[in-house]
Image (cartoon, rainbow, N blue to C red; front, top):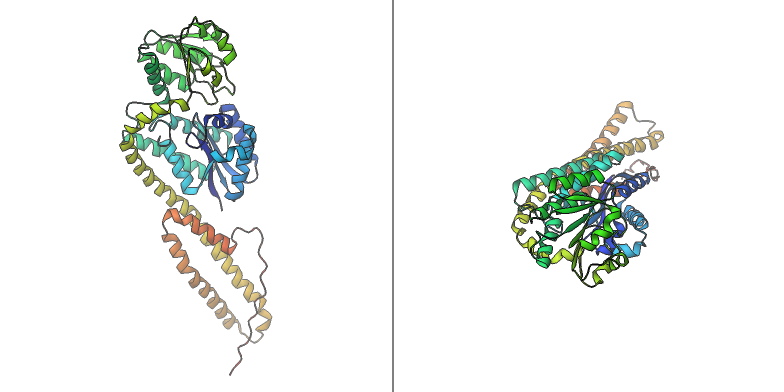
Length: 436
């Protein structure tokens, strides 16, 4: 029987130093998807990797064994030992895994509660898995329902009011450190979604920005035109570090782009520099924050400002959680229906086979039994088995959807419904009753 398994790590369970090792940017995520799909135990797979989380959603037959397998695969691609990773890892199964994804898509698990960017990230992760052909019936239903839940939360609550995001919080931090930003020279390294959000938040403060384009030159040009900024080549970055007041890191590079030695060699004439590293893995060497006149905030360093934002959204978060639970109940019902009928069919098939086996084993002992009596005997046996199974199957259908899967799993284990080969049973012999 197939089960949904989630294995992941996030800003709630692991420090940035671990998350950046485990992170799966676009190219690595695609390769890892194919590696997951090639494993014989994994039937479906979707990889979600954002600045604050890396999560694997897979469909497997043995979740206990699969947890160990996934942990080893994730640790290996991160260059870590499983023991170094395990403290920051969490795992969920079936409805609990679905509930977690619904909460993530709704913004309830984000560093900024209610931030809208995560829904687009979940959608892109699902589309990438579709493109890699690693999804299937269960993950297709799961991710489509999660995206619909996220949309409903944002339609029916004000959890995203004000458009707060990590980028907007970073700009608030910059205002707190430097005061008025209108005349500050800002360099944004990268041209992705985070760069765009940061540029928008800066533009609202009257800032024009420079975009450092590495691989996405056309995208950087489009952003510069939209926000009244300019673009520069990656090679020109050292020169811009001399003049910048704020540098924002927002790429998907696996390695640091601004190094401590490089920054130390820049002649800034004692002017202060604010570094905002919004990337995971980090774009800016943490040692840069130790240099004179340099202030560095990474994604975890923004947490104090984030906590203040959280307080204003807690009421809406409670309403969002109610919606999530409603949608999870619907998913649980679908999952239970998906599993109940095959289980009941397998149980009845096993019972029918047992009756046929019993009749066959005793055929030679019924020489004097006529055809009509033999038919009656078979009908009586089948009726007894059907009556025996009727009560449990009806109660199984009536179970709460979220408890149904566990009961089904136990039932299949007890009756050996998932065993590849028939278990040999001792021959059942019908003996003539002795008369008193």
